[in-house]
Length: 260
Ligand code: 48H
Image (cartoon, rainbow, N blue to C red; front, side):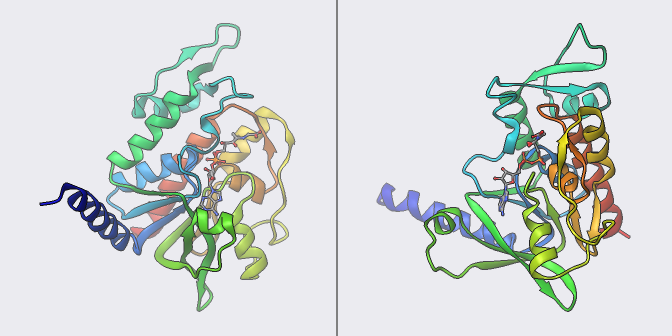
């Protein structure tokens, strides 16, 4: 027995099994930010087969950096139950009733662990470069390694088939953009197109992030900043309650749809 060979073949075997099992999903999630990690955890807990495809090496999206690299974020009362369900600690802000600070590194790592330990699979360093759009339906994702994307290598992708696709790509709404511009889908917005994120207005942005979390085309959902960008909501800076509540809401909508 050569341990060098044992290690390498065990990794290849178990990764291949994990990826093969993720090629046919109930829910394919793009991006591992706070909203989609919350959704992934809730969807997996509901017994759905779910995987998150995250471009970066570390999932967590914009959580890690807090506000301007001060690694603390703020969450309001209405989302404390979600922090508590992940075991994330928080402290009240004395000067502002109803708001709390928390360590952004604790938050990112707890969200990731909560999603994975509930049964969601996370594929990091994987970029979603296209959608499957077949017979008028969004039916999955087209994936490739991030280094392949970054180096501009001409390497054909692989495909993931899913009953629902969730765009959790944050500010750029990458999947909704592909749907709107490349598949020429009419999205469920006022104009049928992406309306675009508005400037900072914290309370409006927090409320609209949750309101705008919905199915924008049969089988295609958006959460977090992606939903806000699609529906033209305001931004809110380093307050994260809306992201968590958006993830919680979209998981409920998807469960309702897939279990109907
Ligand atoms: C694979 C991709 C792809 C792709 C992007 O931005 P995120 O943290 O997502 P949200 O919406 O859950 O949280 C938003 C929050 O972090 C934030 O930015 C706030 C509150 N801003 C307020 C303000 O005023 O600025 O994470 C999205 C993730 C990232 O990790 C990307 O790397 C990943 O999606 N991603 N992964 N394939 N095509 N596109």
